[in-house]
Image (cartoon, rainbow, N blue to C red; front, side, top):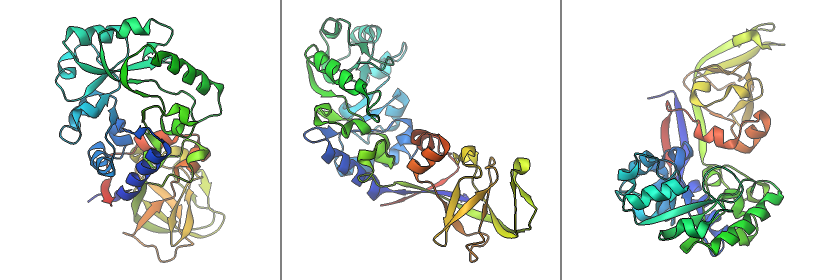
Length: 344
């Protein structure tokens, strides 16, 4: 048993998907489950989302698709990075559907005898996809396209780029004969319904992240980091705590050293500004977060002792604002030393 645990709320995960599906209007909401389900564990996340009604799933790599074998309909599992040279055999194996991003990928897919596929159009992010200004109709000629998609670069901001990308995607829609079209990510769902098309692709918001103010009341937290108290100490006025002696006690206090550090994704950026919750009190973090340990002031929680569990005060939106570290990084960089406990 580890001295750290990740408590995951399956009911909240499912309800977040239902909320995003409702907000998607006539479109159906899929789920981005890349990066191991945004750090929460794709093989645990996917069945719960499927039971909630989700049918479309998106991963980045083929090995991520292989890990989900038997859990979803392979015809509804998309590999966003498409086909790199040497991946042709796995791409045509039927475990998932590639998202073709370039003329070279299209050529490799056709040469390998591939059938149904998806196509990504770059409408202004300059990352992956066929350039919307190219001969899209000519490049996609002869393809059996299920989903034609693009990705919003600034959906979480009040940006003119959103309307520009929508207009470009509307133009592309007339050039690609696809069964379905998709543009909106989590934040994109909160934009006008014109962005929804046939399928939306939420990611961050499924897992308790809040990409924009419009979703703040719709999304429930999914994860909670908990750690055990390894030692309780009496720190005297003038004593310093942790590396670099960045905290010096101004008065006597009772402190706890907990089994959690930056190696577990509890980032050093929280040093001196983060905290934990115990006995319904916010318990401030003292000094620097180290690799495996963090020290906190537990003077306000006299009943807390060695071996007790305590939860990190880790509201994703608040810690993003406090540290400048994005909610995406907080989720996807969770360490692997946690015991994982799903509560449904």
